[in-house]
Length: 508
Image (tube, rainbow, N blue to C red; front, side, top):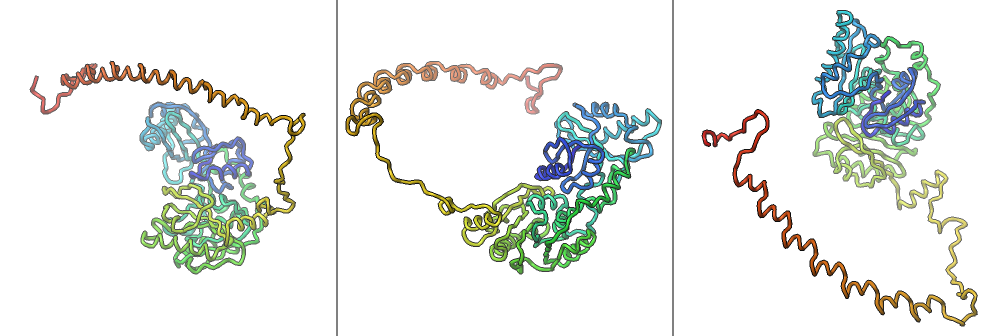
């Protein structure tokens, strides 16, 4: 099977699949492939937080043109997946020089399926774009084609708890991926000072309690398949054995009354009101939290704020971090370098992510008071690690600097000079060579082959001076130059006539 995701979240998705018990996990571009049985497919749809959809491939083939796609699709026994009473739709993703338009590919696949049933039964299934009973996906990379059943149907980011959204809301899959990327699983308080419609606080509460994101959805595409096992899926749906207690708290702030009202409704619909506290408050009023916390936020940019106020907002974010979040860890998603520059802090980690079509970065800031070395030592001490310099650690014994007296091996003191000194004073081979006939010097002074070649006939110079083929061609008869000077019309092969410019027509 194939789990699709956003670029930058592939490794997090692979970790989720590993925890779920999937086999043969392999990371690709915006996808992770894995193997498993029907139960695994149901669990992947129901439990994965960073997957957009789960595909089940039914045929791999190569095709050089649309007609070949049509022929390969018609070879599939479609009665195993469809019948004339069901509706279907095709989603095409194409990266190929041979296939320029994804909709044309969709039409070819649709025609192949319809003609298959018409030839077999005299009837054909209907196509429905919105909420079809069977959704198919064809992926073409150059000439490699994969036709799959889409087991998810509507994108998995549509959890089902969102009642309303503000302008440019954060995608639920991206929000969950950002939280998981920080390593937070509910061990301390979490704050989102720009919470908008409440996506980050809600996803954080679900992660902290390990509530499956699919619990709010009204349905999945696999529930309409002919081999759907309702009892198996009910067992997965009602299993809450992996859920856990959450003893800390999540805080969401925003200065927009409209966003505050929307977030309140969404949090209530998600059933996490007990874990999330919302407050109508601008970030300028943010104060140092009483408990150790982490900030994960997606500040306004693009459609959510005018460019005149943008840089001032990020400057204020940096100021609040430095003065009201000492000892904390903050993660910020944004897409403009100048915004990060205004924060004025050095990021300890940068992760490229896409928020829709915007190429963003997710940056980590460790806010500390005083020297960075002291801050890291304090952090290590809390975790039981000793990161002090070795000289400051207990039990460290510096190496003695006292020099030992030299005694020549096997000789009495003063009898002979040390071998090294003897060589230097009375005939060091290296010195002899340098003074009385070093081969290297001889070569350089009395006939260095390299110099001889350069002075008395270097092949390279000879070629350049006395007949370089390249120069000869340019000077004495380059075919290309001849053609240009003669203005002779270019010879054409086949039945085509040479093209005559408009201003030359009528001339010989």
